[in-house]
Length: 223
Image 1 (cartoon, rainbow, N blue to C red):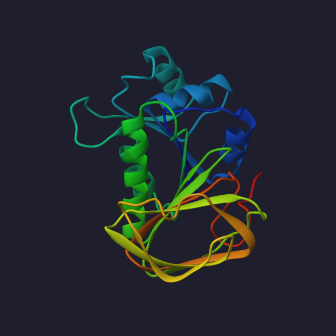
Image 2 (spheres, rainbow, N blue to C red; image 1 turned 90 degrees about the horizontal axis):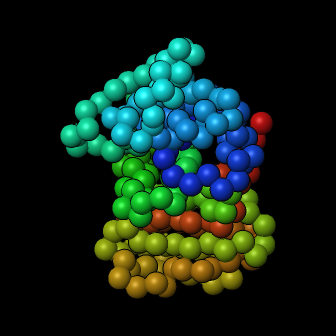
């Protein structure tokens, strides 16, 4: 089951995000992420948070529409997006897509990458998706084929002190090479053919500058 989580970030292309809404098996809003859906007359199955960014009247309308409203205290150890992810996992989600997870407060963007790292560590599929970029974290060992066309920019960022990777079908190829967290060696590569990468050691954040990348050798399915 695939769950889309709408966070309180930027929504720069409404049609892209509405397609992701339609393609999801379940939809959860994290606090202010409810606003985008409400603006388009869509409702999630649930909205969760401390509701410091979703107006009370909007939350009341969601409740009246049958949305499960889960309220958490303002003083807590988890962000609203973390709470939404935990709820999705509790409901049996095998794949979680974070939408509206970019833009807004930069500290929350780093927090959303931390969420991807946590999901990957637990063997779950987690992805940040936006019209211009798709992100996923991979713990070793991992082998992934991309579906993005030739010329698509791809960046590899170590989230552990060093990650060891092999890249094939890219403009710059490497074999069992270390990517250190304190250097920029993996940035701004590009798809040159049948692009495939392997993470041999460590933890790697992969950014593909194509919002439809599914990290599985095929584009994500859109409704």
